[in-house]
Length: 333
Length: 195
Image (tube, rainbow over all chains, first blue to last red; front, side, top):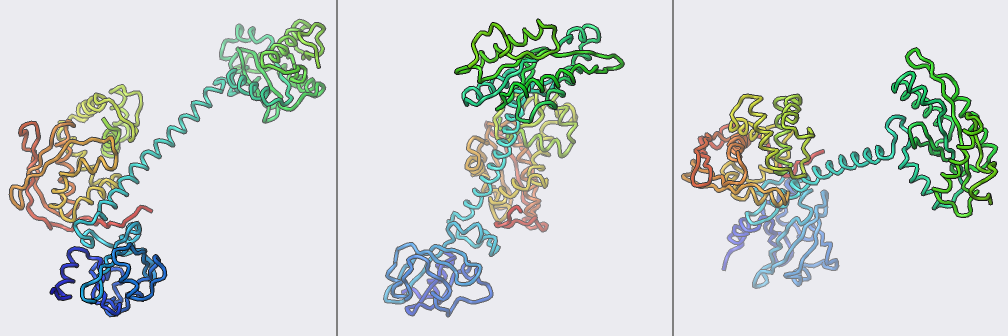
């Protein structure tokens, strides 16, 4: 029969986290790694259940009850801080000599190696603890690399989307963005107004002062349109000198006419560019979604277009309401 | 070639020769971008072209440059994560050398599509080893010479490393351990965690 000393020597090598308890439940010996958890209080001589709290199964308060759990998985915690969680397995010794309880950190290994400054030497050669720690670090590093790639891709995607919906010269929305906004408003059934605005005499600015002057004038015109509209209105450049403004929730023709008048007034102010004075104006056609029984984007655009044509025909620099046309394509509601 | 490898070259060049040198390489190689993504895979010839241009610009032989890359991977503060992962291989330098047989499997556990060539350690005597680098990644043995030299420093061991040339289709590195505790190595705590 092997002595306790011999047994402890064997266990030191095989499982450095063992606890040897006698038949009264007192700790006779512990493995070096277990003692490392409480370097200042020798565990030898203390009652097992005074050092370790049995978390599961809960109702065990005596050693004989503990021994009856031979082979079952125990969940334990140290009584004082740090309250490291441990897993355990009981193997009774023959002839009622007590038992060996083998412990392991389980998932608490990550905290345990830090809290107790454990090293490879604290684990048996067959323990997978070191491999687990390696894997956690390796996977974290790989995950970090993937995460930073995801962030960059997301940023690139947002920038590309933004570009796809922006008129690069003026910073306004482009035709594609206008189509999307118009589609949303139509399917949402909310009332809105649509202005089709055409810059007058723009071609002559381009012809007389060159494209740089033309570009500058377009930027100034865009700025004026943004300033004269609300933040949730949509201002889009849909062609060379053509713009569409969508007023969400606004179908009061008096208010819209006033906005149009202000827009034209401001656009008529001469714009200086490198010593030249550029003069433009604007014609506007305005249509309301409420003028159609079940409006379609193309119908409303067409209505605003007709009104714009009428404004041009009447001598430009003016706004024309679709509702005022004598021969409307569709009657108002 | 895996992005992690290209990214390692990029990081090495930027840290050692500066950003402008790296931008020169990417321009001459006509990559169309200046940053490799660590988690994407690139054509092999991109990496080969990049290395060729780099050697020409710096006027240094490829093997020498790759050895420096290997040293960088272990010893530069940018690469602390990688140094730690290598140190999990063993408590001593000799244990680390023995862990090299598992290196490609360990790498695959972390990043499943990163395939590194097989390594095989032969113990000639307790202080003499040969490392066989099997084919699959051109220049790998040169990088490994740099890695092994830097890891020896990390453990505080004194080792002499030489590239012994070809045996069969494997390249051979000879390792002579002069002293295993020559200097105080750098610290390695299992539980050290980034803030």
